[in-house]
Length: 86
Image 1 (tube, rainbow, N blue to C red):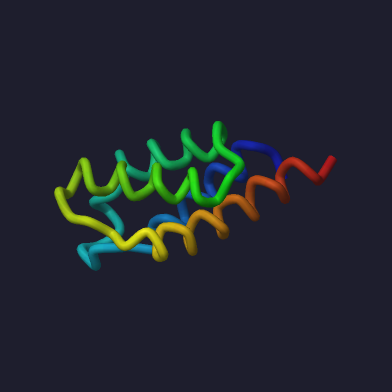
Image 2 (cartoon, rainbow, N blue to C red):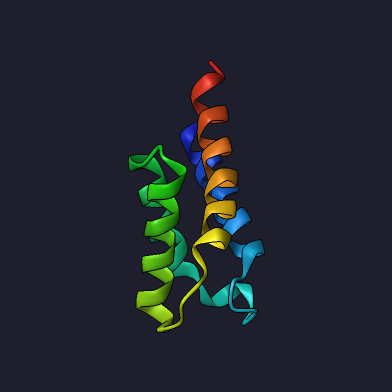
């Protein structure tokens, strides 16, 4: 899997997550921000905190960190899969 495929898969994971149950079409900016952070961060806690901040900034609603950690593990699994396949 190359990085563009990883980006597409990560975006799909985030769309399906739909943390506020408002529909997947309303998260495009947040998804782009989180996928960008995924390229920079390798620690699940750091990525989870970033996810929490991104969504809170946009929607002025708080997501429990535990939910963000769950999604961060899924995203990081995609990242490491992309890095490991040559």
